[in-house]
Image 1: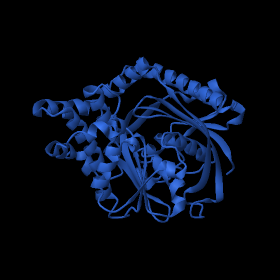
Image 2 (image 1 turned 135 degrees about the vertical axis):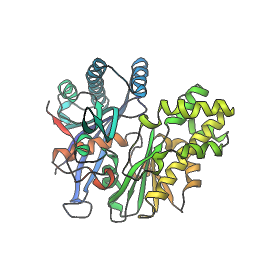
Image 3 (image 1 turned 45 degrees about the horizontal axis):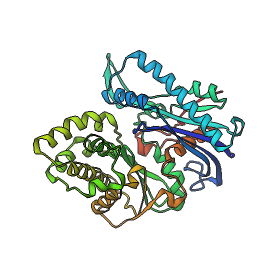
Image 4 (image 1 turned 60 degrees about the vertical axis):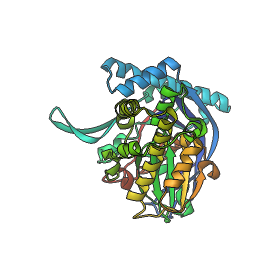
Length: 397
């Protein structure tokens, strides 16, 4: 391995725009966390620049409606793939300008694209069993508009060997925190919450989506308070947890499924809100602040339960590192501490020099970097894959 300058691109479940960041990535020491060739690569990085390239409001609204509905015409899917590619390319060009770099300064782009649908559990389709995932944002468009090679389509190789195609972040978590050799939980609270457990040997031993993160909380704020999200948890702090409703939501079968498992808007998106939140609120006449507080407790308690049920019996976490937008919701963090089943020190990604906001951009830069050198970069114990594989497809400029 050698140092490379790599751009990471991601548009997540919030669909507010594209997180774009450029990193200098280089190997450390022997190049592996435990000094052996079959362990996680030991890498260090420096962030050289970053931007959020927002979607236009009309585009974002239509995109969220399309994904939330679960239906689209073939023409919409076709054109959306190209349109997103153009927008991702625009984000790269803006990032280069802001960072004072040219295309010749960058070796590679890692682009996740925008997830449109994720169906990791095999289903029958026209007489065949098939699992799949679809991220749009045509990498050929990005490469040819920017003049920089692109690695994209990271999830499909993991599905091809029986994995869930997620969580991919467990690889980055092992790279970033495995070198400390402390039993660590890395928790990302985005639209969906996901938790990675790293043992004291620096290996990721479990990772899965625990359930909803900010997704349902944000939706309640949008509908009942005409704001995009609960700023610092102030709305939730003024409400009360409706315990019977909380227990009802926690009875969802997803929470008892053994990992590896993943979820998204398909399970805890607009349809869930319309079917499980709105009817209960209207029937029981729940106060608006109590709705937000109970949904916040739903996120916090399902995270703690996921750890207690599936990780603690194998690895007792000493340190919990928080990331994602939920990190900035102090009421959510307070509830998480209350629900957590053992003493644990809590830190933030920023305490380790890692930007929470651009963590996923860093992930896709790391995946692109390792793809460039042909290094296996999935974590089978976390995704359920039958074997290690090299994720991503390279498109030349």
